Image (tube, rainbow, N blue to C red):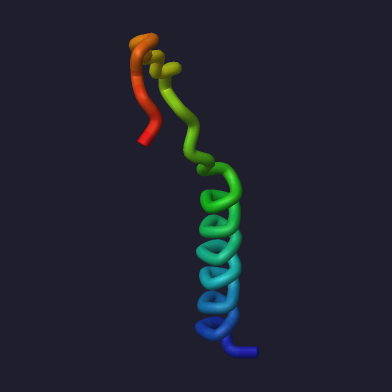
Length: 45
C-alpha cells in the first residue's frame, strides 16, 4: 500500500472518530433554572 494512501486513511479515521466523539459529548444543558411567577387570576385561553 502506498504511503500516501495509508496517510489519507489514517487521517480520515481520526477526523471521523473526532466528529463522533464531539457529537456524542455535546448535549444541550440549561445553564440555570428559569422561574416565572404566574398570577393567580391568569385565565387559560
